[in-house]
Image 1 (spheres, rainbow, N blue to C red):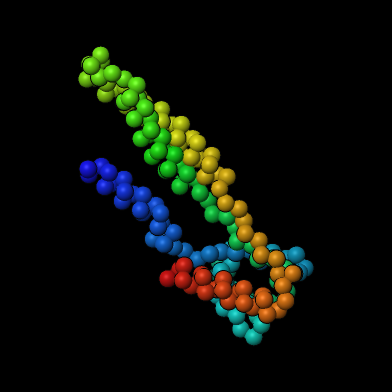
Image 2 (tube, helix red, strand yellow):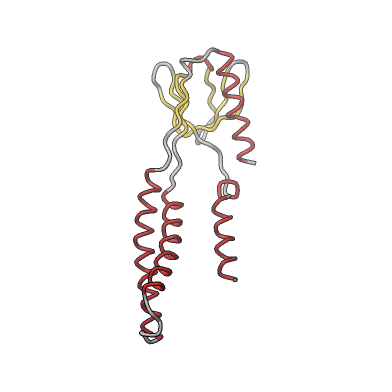
Length: 168
């Protein structure tokens, strides 16, 4: 019973890891003249100007000069690897357990068989989970050229508010 409780706790932590280990959403801004500013954090809007912070500085962009706002995809490799290892190990254990007859095999061989089955499940599940994690998610691109000034302001205020909620 304790083992199942531990798995349930790990599962809950993984589901809510974005809230537990929260950080600012970073964006890339591309201006109308195609200059790009990567890894910026949206902070505020003042007098039709977007206030952002970069690594070491505060930057100001006129809202109408923004062409694209890009939110890069987050890496899901670790999450895919973890779920693959977990599911693969459990599946390998139960498959090897059901394929062996305990009455025909001594205890030591039975234990090694379960370990081998779990190990193979971990390897296969981890590989599949990593490959799945690599392919998950894509960059979110917000096109500002198709929006009027008021729509841009509403969208930016929404993104700034989301960042505040996400971070605190």
